[in-house]
Amino acid sequence: MTADLRSAPIDESSWRHPGWRVVAAMFVLATGSFGVSFYGLAVYLVALNEHYGWPIARIASLYTLYHLVGAGLLVFIGSVISRLGGRGVMVAGLCAMAAAIAGMSVIDAFWQLAACLFLLAIGWSCLSTAAITAVLAPWFQKRRSLAVGLALNGASFAGLIMVPLMVWIIERHGVERGLPMLAVGLLAVLVPVVWFALRRQPPVAASADTGTQERHSLAQIARSPRFWGVAAPFALPLVGQVGFLTHQLALLEPRLGVQAAAWAIGVTTGAGVIGRTAFGALADRFDPRRMTGVMFIVQASCLLLLAAQPGPVWLYVACGVYGLGLGNMITMPGVIAYQELPPRDVARAIGLVYGTLQVCYSFGPAILGLIRDATGSYSPALWFSAGMITIGAVLLQVTRPRGAS
Image 1: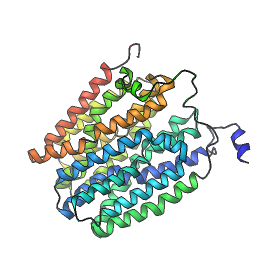
Image 2: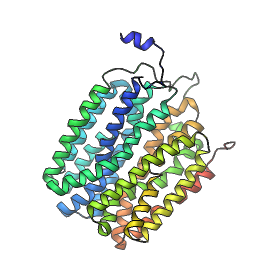
Image 3: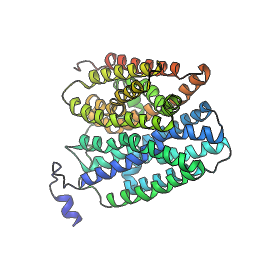
Image 4: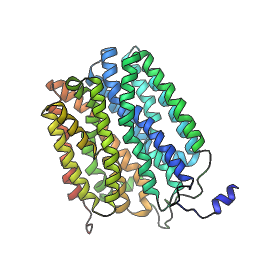
């Protein structure tokens, strides 16, 4: 039966193709995992500050360690999944993630928070964009980009659904009971989803290495101007974006209240679903560098509006418009890489691109926290983030390869 399945022609345009069930499962997984390990950092920042009394800048500095550990693991996650299988790796990641979240409720020293975040980083690397892509890619050939894009829309839904839910759970039950409840719920929902969706092997082989030319080493790829032409324009904007998202709840809470601020984050990430879908459809027809540059300028303008501390309506407007470009800042490096990097190197280069970007944006939460504590206001921190995104818009154009339109 398995042999027949593997030899049968694959109709990827049919929604009965088994790969689309994996897409649905990865969408659910992304919703939960991005919720608790990416957007959830903003929730932990406020909850741990209030519960333990640790300064915001001190907690945010550990987020830098968290992102750095995850970045180091991202480079290898594709190889690990291809060797051990996606189901085992992802279930192990969920267990590590749940243990880290529950552990935050029983710690009594700051170094123990660092240990929890280290464990959370291990779980995150097993469930991140790179991991989801590595699991989905072998199921598709012609519609691979669409499949990955639809699955990663779950990352946008994470902010819309998970952040308000996490805030509600912690407000109602407190850190000591709320975080363990969150951990148990994570395992109860997502482990069965992953276990049953990935019980079968993909019916097609990934075509990442079909070329006959010798591939370059990671060190050679890292020295390539084309590699940095892809990575550099997104590195600084992601410093600003990840820093902003981490502090967004703390930024908005004094003006809106904690629950309304959580819904503002939901507006941001909900708009990200619309933006990712529309942007993905247009990117195949128009110049992705130019489109992304325009998106960066719009996002920088929204941060400057937030820095001006407008009324509640304009806060929601700024968050919503900013969110239209939210997911594209992390998906467009891959799109541009596949267009501009040598085909024989691109599969390995993608992990290096995202690992490099995560190393850079890992400093965002700490930098914004330090600026906020030094000035007593989030406005200068938002100016900084807007500046980083604007520089990225310029780099998108000046690093364009010769001959590219």
